[in-house]
Image 1 (spheres, rainbow, N blue to C red):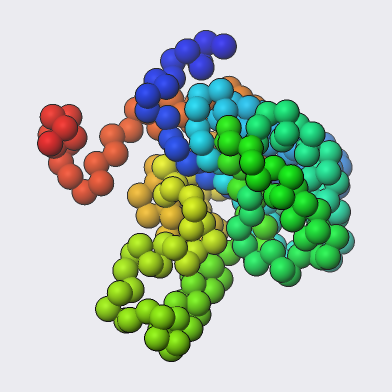
Image 2 (cartoon, rainbow, N blue to C red):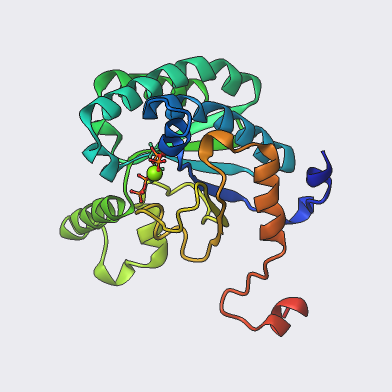
Length: 249
Ligand code: IPE
Ligand code: IPE
Ligand code: MG
């Protein structure tokens, strides 16, 4: 594919985070129910994973269900939970074939039993795969994640396992759900909305943000490559000057 050839394989993001948005609008535009849109988002996930693998990205994290999404109508929440179960079951074979390791972040204990059990099984089955890590953000909220980290750090301080002076960015990082993931390099959000919606606030501190009008069920490899090409045209300065970056000081 043309677009893929334009990608510099030496400068691919290690970690791409994706806010898969627009399923409801996609379905509505076809006179269908919102869940039809969610179901049609699966192809987009498959294509994205394939594209990320093709260029050598090691980690993709997808926002599948937020802590705020619990406030949607019960019917939609239930349908999404059922979809999580059926999708995990149907995709497992593909994850094994493509050497995909599945992980999760979020308050997964709040998921219905069946979803939790299926998720844990897929995580276990794929734990030795090492081509790419797909992290599913399920019942995830960045603020909840930070509260959880603060509680766990506080417990260690109270138990004298950690001194207050030792609390550092590294320590906080290691208490987040994403403790074994690198910082996000690129965040992609579909459907034209330009907001973070409580996703990976800490981890995206220096991420490049990419917004596209494409609705998630329409998102394909070429759209992913567009985002990568745009990413490679950005200059990541991390507070330095452009001159420092170009002369590699
Ligand atoms: C994203 O699509 C999927 C989830 C949040 C689970 P939406 O369901 O938010 O679709 P829109 O934004 O209503 O079109
Ligand atoms: C964010 O999408 C959550 C997921 C993609 C799972 P939403 O569609 O729920 O976000 P808001 O509420 O419009 O910001
Ligand atoms: Mg939405």
